Length: 135
Image 1: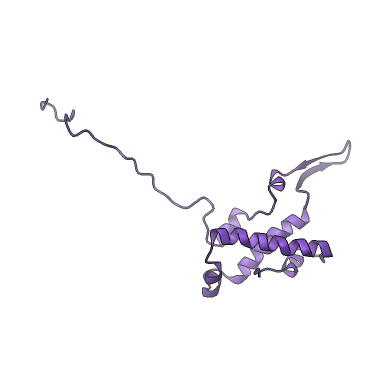
Image 2 (image 1 turned 90 degrees about the vertical axis):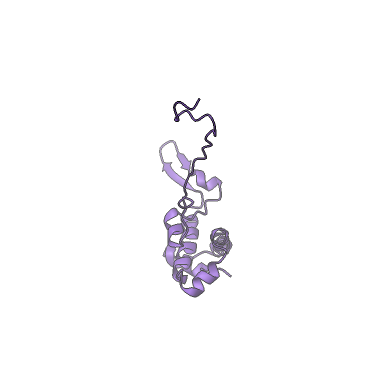
């Protein structure tokens, strides 16, 4: 059971869902939550303890699905004269995306988090060129 439901998607679209859209929304909501749980396996605990507000999870899941339903073909542009169109590359990859801003709202750093690079330098033990006269 996902946090969001098709009615949450309908509210964000501002129109009723057709029966096929409602079925698709239910499936895509499950996919959106699976994506979230891949990064946050303890999602339920975070929601229960209030670390993440339930409404934030609902919003992120429903918005991800609403983006797909608003533009199921993934078009980024379309021209009427001598008809042409451009498809967003993300559409070929499933188009169900969660933007970086939403990941941050969930407490996930989409950039992978802070890290430190420590150089590993091995100095010779002898001779030490900086100790002049010891050769």
